[in-house]
Every structure is written in C-alpha cells, then in structure tokens.
Length: 417
Image (cartoon, rainbow, N blue to C red; front, side, top):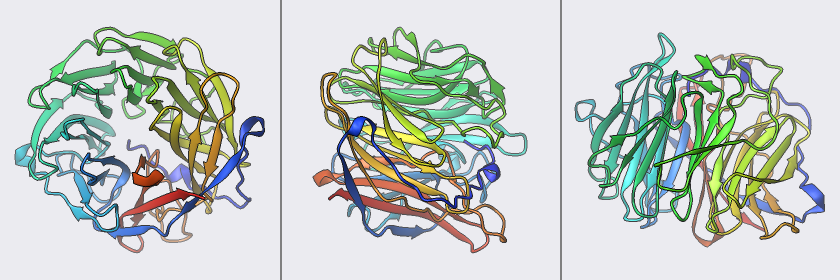
C-alpha cells in the first residue's frame, strides 16, 4: 500500500503497557538483538519459511527510493535463521519480474515458493498491475506471470491450500478479484469476483482448505470507499462459492485515510489455526481485540488481549497449531512510536481465557522524509511475524532513513521466558 504516512508521524510521550482480558495469565517474550541488513528499501515486508528451513523476506521500494511500476521487486533469503541475508536474483523486468509496491509470499506443501508483487504509479496514485513469481527450486530460478493489468489494482495476497492449489486475491475499484493455480503456478485462472465492492484487506487458508477474505470499505489504494462494506467472505469448497459474514467487533474507517483523529486501518488480519478455528484481530482505540469463530464466521467469541494506554493500530497475525497465534501491532502517537510482538494461546472450548506473552515495546529504524525534526514512521501497514523452530518467533521491520541514506530491514527473534 502506498498511502502517505506523514500523517502517522506518531509522537508518543507516555508509557506503554498491556493488560490481558479477564485476568488471564500473562507471560513475557524476550527479544534478541536484531540483525540489521542494509541493502535496498524493504517497506511493508513479508516473510515466509520454506520446508527446508530457508527464510525468504520481501519488501517494496516505491515509497521513497523508486517510482517505476516495472522495477524488479526486492527479495532476500537466509539459510541460517536470519543471522545473515542474501539478495535473491528473481530475474529481470524482461522476464516479467516487475513490481514496486505491495508484496506477499507463500510456500506450498511441496516447497513451491510464490512471490506476489504489485506495480504502482505514484504520479497518479494508482495501481497498474499484479505479477506473480514462482520458484520450484528454493529461489534459484523463477517464472513470472502478469495476473492483472487493471487500473486501480491493489493489495494482493496469496495463500496455498493443503492440496497445493494456490489462491490469489486483490482489489480495484470494482471489488475483490480472485485467481487460482492448480499446477504449481504454471497457469492461472481468474474466477468471478468474490465481492463486487470493497478492498482485499487480508486472506487466510485453513487446514481443510477453508478460505477467508477480509473485505474492507477502503479499496483501490484509497481511491474508493464502499460505505457499509465491512465483512469476511468464506469458502469451504475451494473457492467455488463464497458466503459473506459481518466482521466481528466495532470499528470506524477513515474514507480518505488521512484523518489524524481516527485510528488508521488497512490490513485487518485473519488466521485459521490447525483445528479449523478462524481468528480475527483488530484494534478499537487503545484496545486490541481478538475473536474466534468455530463455525466458519457465523458466530464469534471475543477477548480484549491488550489495553495499551495509547492508540494501537496496524495489527498482523498468523496461526500455528490449535489455538496458537502470534501477532504484532504499533502503539503510540508520536516520536516514540513503538511496535509490540505477542504470542497467544487460546484454550479450546468457551470457558478459558487466552494466555498472552508480550514483548517490551520496540522501535523500528524507519523515519519520515524530513531531516529535522526527526519523526518516526511505521513504513507500511503491518509488521510480519512467522513461527520458527523451537517455539521462537521472527519479525521483520523496514529500515527507511532518507536523511542518513539507510535502507534495508531488521530481523528480530523472540523466545518465551
């Protein structure tokens, strides 16, 4: 996403705290010193872990360092758990490797790696294409497909079902588009739209191939606002049919994405756990709320998992085993803008409360395009988190510093105390 973040020059001067709901036990996550990799801007990054343990990290560079929608997208890999990173050669623009904006990564059960990228024309503030790169040899070689060349193309996501089918969604000014590949990305089929209004806020796949798309009112890079569209579309038949359910909770959306009085919203994350429960995460002012549905979005149970004492926004979430979640979000309204990492264990049934393990707030090395006074930015609309081996978590954050000519990303890991 490309909306300007100058209005998020978040200037926090108060202490940050978090409290779990209902008196639930809370334990700590300990962050290790991050690895800083300086190379090229990796704004709004995404991370995926290959079955052989290789980590892949992507991010886009158009916000500050590039305006060409047909630039080659940025991808790195690590074979040592993130201790060191190497730029991946994904091909050239002539090969079809194009994109300077939103990215996503997914890995199939057979190890096929999917790298989704979007092209954005900053001169007019519009998306112009969606491209998909596929590697079947752990990133050594790539084939590229142009999935769409529609005005207002925006926010693509890719997931891979247990049967190996790859599913992609994106949006424009006419709703949420949808395509699939059943042959490891060799060919793609675009289907009927999932919904004819709204933006593709997030996408998740479950253990039996269940699909859930978070559809928000903001679409087409904030060029369109579809009032009263705030829902989750669910498919239990591999994407052949979709049922629209109201999203749980209450939230106020900013039609212009520019009102400093409102909580900024874009990605509203969903996740299916290994037991087939669907989770939704969002913020309501200073509260962060988690909801679970065991009946595919028909009913929900909600918990407040944090009360930060300052605005909380831009959450992200992934699921692991049954009731096992990890999430991030940002906190604050000022120069002390901070991020939070949490792990969440949700017991089965309806009686137990989630156990939340949280990190101390941490600051990312991302700054607005002004030299003085220095002001921090989120440099995107989420921080991705991934489950690693031995119960560890990994998080990527952008390094974006015009004044000091620093570009790249930081790799953070955390363990439970």
